Amino acid sequence: MKVFRVMGEIQKPNLKTPFRKEVIAVKPEHAVEKVYTELGSRHRVKRFHIKISKVEEVAPQDIEDPLIRKIVVGEEKIGEQS
Image 1 (cartoon, rainbow, N blue to C red):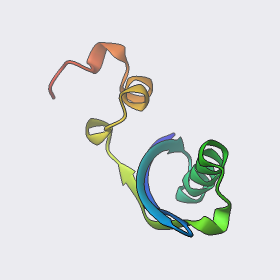
Image 2 (image 1 turned 90 degrees about the vertical axis):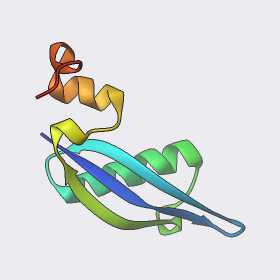
Image 3 (image 1 turned 180 degrees about the horizontal axis):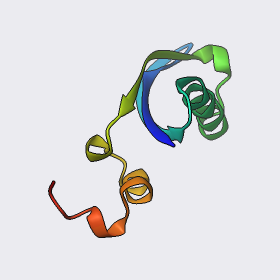
C-alpha cells in the first residue's frame, strides 16, 4: 500500500475551501475516489463541487498525518531519525 497526498478545493456557491488530504491506496485513482467519498460524507458536498488539482505519492518519512504515519512506518520507528 502506498500513501498519496491529494490536493484541491471544495467549490460551493459562496465559499471556496482548499484541502490537502493524505490517504492510503494502491493507485492514484483509488486515492482520488477515497477523497471524494470522505469529503462528500463529512462536508455534504457533491462530487462536482470537489476540484482535485494534484495527486502525488508521499515517501514514508514525509507523511504529515500522524495516524497514517503510525500505520505505515510503525510505532517503534516514529521517533527515530534515518
